[in-house]
Image (tube, rainbow, N blue to C red; front, top):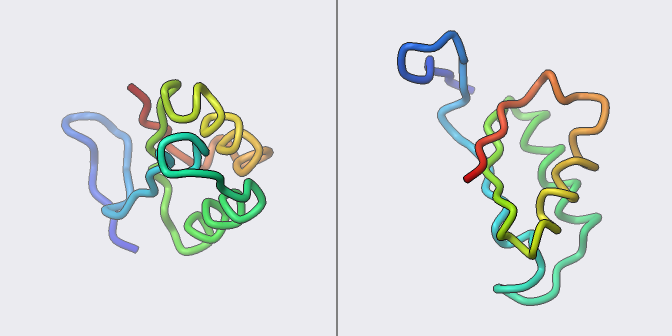
Length: 82
């Protein structure tokens, strides 16, 4: 995985991130939370450390999924939220 510094900060982020809009379970239809969690964890295993989420995704459901996926590994990720 390649990484870059975010702007002038000391945050080193992966050039590939994972978005969680589809994991909210509302706009795109029903989703399997276990598959969503596994997708996030697999991305992390491959070096992805940038996770994009927002309270609007599934009325907060995507953020709950992210929380479960990164449990015990919060320091390994950079959360981008709007």
